[in-house]
Image (cartoon, rainbow, N blue to C red; front, side, top):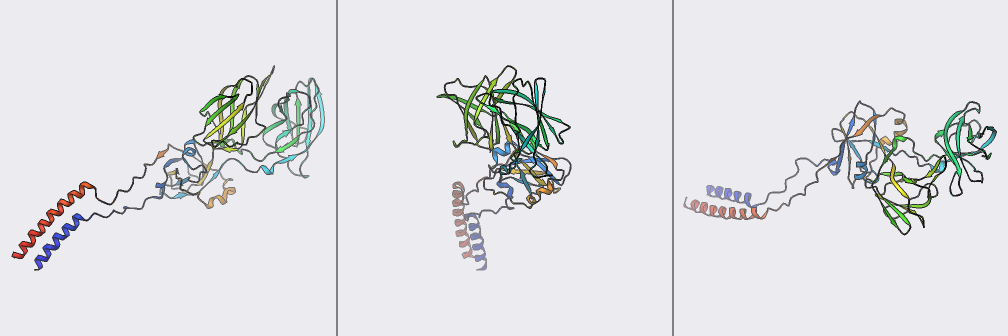
Length: 420
């Protein structure tokens, strides 16, 4: 009897092992968290450093979240490395400062006239700092080449730049951009070839705090674009598929013209621009004045920009090219000594990380940052779908045959057991 039971158990065990489908196998190890990111770039470094800076490139902007919330840096062990982002702009337009000035001296030398201005500090004993001079222009039409000088004491003068001031009846330019925040207490405006003896009263010195802090954040490119002429309008559709943060559009053109324009994003919404939405170019005997740059109030990463130029009854502009200037972001991260590092991006479900390092930006900015650059993009293979747990049809038929044979084997074994 015992042997009969053993034979039956063995047969039934074989039968059950064949006909019962195997359970889905568990993964040998949990899936790494970074597998949720579609792209990676190696971060190339040289010497060791406490903190590093890394500028993003076009491929990262094209395939990451528009707000860059999915960016992650991982070290050689797969651990996330803390970082923070610097964008290169300071959103403090409401803190613009204006200084008054007074005319303290005028001197005529041959055909030129020099005007000396003393800038009034906001409070006695405080520093003066400005990046634009704004003048009140004479009423008559004119175009004058000027040379600007600066001085700390009104005695020793340093050349700052050369520029133009003009009023043409159609457009005017009443400002001089200084290129940086200067701390001169005195300015000298020398108007060249001033046969008309035009006078320029004391200007205002402006300190506009919304500006690009460092030219390192600027990049230029030649985007793809398409021009369409229709009903007295020129529409230029600029491709920004990489979603770069465009700040300036430069039009290359020929001839003299004055046109109004507007700029829209891919949704058709108006994009605010600096100035009065005019494009102009005028050739004179010995000079050319032009305003063919379009500067947006804030960087725009729309995938397409549509520039509409209103020609009315005039011929379309003779455009020869389009160039864009855009801003890139900089990542500052702690070098924990566990290189090589990688940048992960392309995860629409990732929320922006919160790291303590952001609280130490002021201190980190005082340190010498090590350089880091991005290598070639690596696209991770798509995750394969988990196969169904049920057996395929061919295997099911095979199992049925095996079951039939097993039943026959059980029947034979039972009969032999009875005889024994």
